[in-house]
Length: 192
Image 1 (cartoon, one colour):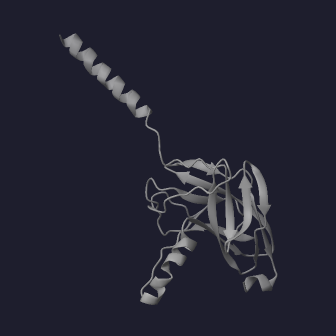
Image 2 (cartoon, one colour; image 1 turned 90 degrees about the horizontal axis):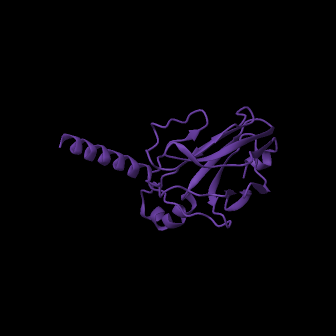
Image 3 (cartoon, rainbow, N blue to C red; image 1 turned 60 degrees about the vertical axis):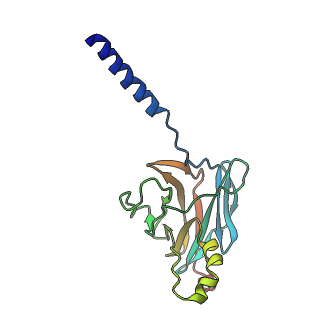
């Protein structure tokens, strides 16, 4: 009798362990590329391992914010939920997993030369206090929805960075090619 009870308990444990291995993460992003947009204009596109567009330029002293849009296997933008994002900056050196809410995807950048350009990721929260600002809140939310990469020109030259979409401690997507950034000393760019 004790032997049967032991075998039953052992079978139950083995079945429980097997069922845990079958769990599939439904929020995994299956991306095949991404787009970077500045003022709703495409400045960089990587799709299926190839660079399609590459025009990321910033002036010394200028900061630009690029919207990041991930692409599916047909080149269409992947819709995502903005829930769970925090409002901390996540650069390659300042990244702290404890600050990020567990389970929510985040964009991480790495590999850039900070003496040429500072590259970090940002998340903006929509903070409106008066009624006039609430009227164009819908347009403002559309601009801020998704992931953002901020680039600040430090000195003239070229650098590059790798972009990774992290989720639950692993990379859902990592750029195949480094994103090239050109920093110019052209002061007319800095006024834009």
